[in-house]
Image 1 (cartoon, helix red, strand yellow):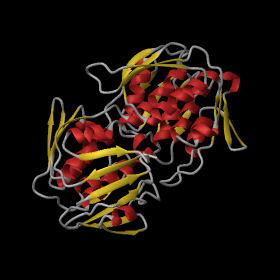
Image 2: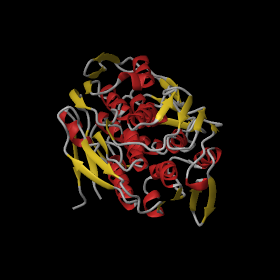
Image 3: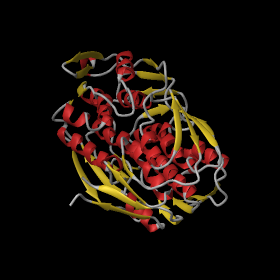
Image 4: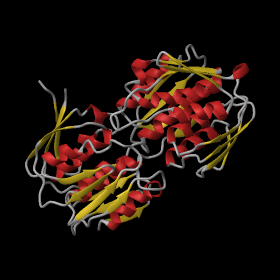
Length: 427
């Protein structure tokens, strides 16, 4: 199994390209199931999860064709053709590896009138049930059955009637499934308390490009008029705001200066605001965002929240960064109940962190020290990379398959801006 080896202490400086967003890509790919015409996605990141989702689409009868990047993109171009669906089931062996597989539920019901998807099972960062996904489909007229670890959703007469969906709490995945199911319903659908993440906006814009009728994009209330059919389209995946935020933290923790080429400041405002509060200099320009930290880091008090609040996917990276702040920071995780599994690993590197329930107190230390550490999930993996970049000596991060799910060419990008980092195999 591969490991990542980091010899810390180097100041990062230079231009670092930001890839297409993982979370957007995994939402846009299932849109191809809604039409018998090709959907071409540009700026698609080279990630394990993207490959896995492509395999799932293949199992459902869609073909996937991958081309190289265009000059204006950093990722690949994928064309998905779902001319005829040959299956409507997402099996356990795929869903257990990638929870985003649940996002075929809405488009399959929307186009084929039925879908059978394995229940996702456990998740390393806490309980993420799909009850809100199922509630939304029921409110749009679907019949739901649960049996033998699978959920089956069926549209009466082969097509959802549409309806009013009101989420009791904000859910990104459930909003995405509801939107994809609604765009081909017989009638209209109103989605209240919808998630407002930029990835939801990207999904809606892609569906509109395919002929969908959606109003209220970017707000908590979406009005969707069902169409008899959607057509193909070519669409560019938005830049990854979490990757950009992660590399901004890399600049901050190493006292460096990075130009995040392609980053969209408007999509990551809460992250940038928190960095500014910590004493980091942020400059927005036409090519992206420049991040510079040269005067030390101030402590912060942060709570994660649904967009436009501070993203839970940035909590671990900020925790690592704040290990080098001048004072005590307080982080509160409100989204997932078990997202502090990186704390013991950071402690192995000299971090001073105390966790009480969902709150962590991070006291800045004079130095971090390299150590062998083990990644537990995607964002926790990045927190260990960040700590390793700033630590004295050598850090070895194990279980890097987590990183490969969400960070494209990480070692290559960091090496190009001054990091001493490499991937090594067991052999």
